[in-house]
Length: 143
Image (cartoon, rainbow, N blue to C red; front, side, top):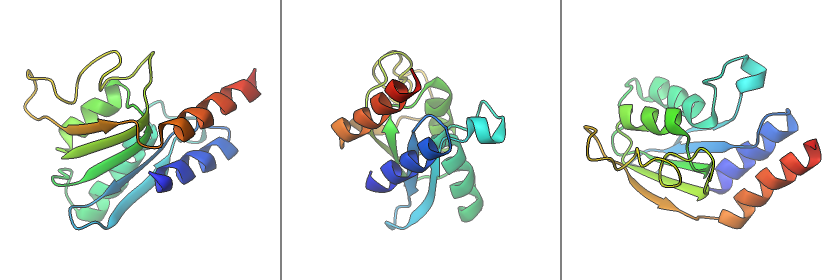
């Protein structure tokens, strides 16, 4: 999660919403590290989790990242949670909940939905205060 926080801080320095994500393979090796890039790329899908999934899939040579763990500073949105399902991610660890758009537990329950063909183990609250403070500070400065 510390790697993901570093990526979130780097994103904030570029004016992006400070969300960071990293993907660790089954063997414990870092496959990808990314921060939000929606503004830099003019791409509404360039959330940290999506950017990291793309990088990890290229690195592995397969869009299915079975056995991988994703660390995200904030609870993934519906788009990102759906992409994690499509990538067959084994485990998700996130820092702070997103009460407005979180799709793991807060608003939707995509990652462990019984109506989908894959379920993801997940854990919330890892370095939660640090992740939450980063987001709050970013938006406080912008107001």
